[in-house]
Image (cartoon, rainbow, N blue to C red):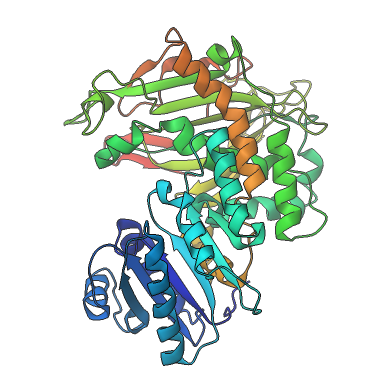
Length: 500
């Protein structure tokens, strides 16, 4: 719900960093422009770089179109977040802002920092008394992914956080869940009687989740080489989307009710172990290729990447959810870099009719109806079904019935960070990941990572830039008439473009 939150101070660790400049400050400015920030509000950037309030505002102003909306609310404190003794200075600076603006504020601490600081900043904040809610005010902390690098590190991080904060104070942000179409999954399923009765093993043949990027790792090669596609994308973003697609109806629309159902899905994932890892999980790495008139570097030629790196830039997986609703239905997930286009979508493939009465006009085979939920770009929903071709006979042609958010002229489509920051300000954690769900996702992924690291005979397939990954991934889909949905077209006139 879009309403003004209570007065508070938004403290950003990493206040001069790239995430703050590109995402956080612009999102706060847009909330201000829509009159969705409280009347008494301040931003305090925290970092090692030396700025005054004036020079910090000047630096941030270069990233904003309207300098009047947010700039006067910006403040800065130069301190070392790894030094416990510096947090008394942070407490003093916050007290100054409170006195100047005559506020009775809550605090949001946003950790736009390297994950290595997640183990120390919350502890130091608690030691300085900055996370205590005993006086009736609220204190919240926001963490960016990754939440650990495996199950043990995620569990240890949760123990540290819960040692100095309550779970209700911790907001683990996943910007994918802030996208309007992801949230619309719940509405599509649970407010429409035509979908929910079909949303189960009796009518669904399989489900696909695709998240592709056309770019490479760029300047993030050093980080990415320690992460890979499985850790960077599948373990968090895509498994959370699977949770929303597969969850049971919550008893009420509340943060805990919805997140309880997502957790049940993650706990029901059938473990992928042993020889199944070779057939159910395909990993790939992009190679030097010519795309059009451009030569694109292979992953191992990227800056910061080891020359013999076996880090995957593509992963496709077949998984099963062992519960009553989804027993036996395969879910196919794929993600990768240097694929033909940037797109994220969910495709629900319904089972074909049990007896084929009509032939397709192109002599194709009936592979059932599809419901496509496009998350980005061109957000919307598409239903793929058959109609009669005009003329004599009963030949069938596939057509689309679609809805695009862009067609809602009077509707504003907020960016993910705008929605998620406003939710945090309002105390709504529905779209934030809970600690037990993080651990459940890592528990599922860990055996795959361990197998890759311990068994060099498991293949790492190369694939040319601009393709949809290793060809062997196309063989994963069960059934002769089924394949991955390829959501973009390539024309000589327009180049590659993505169409719902």
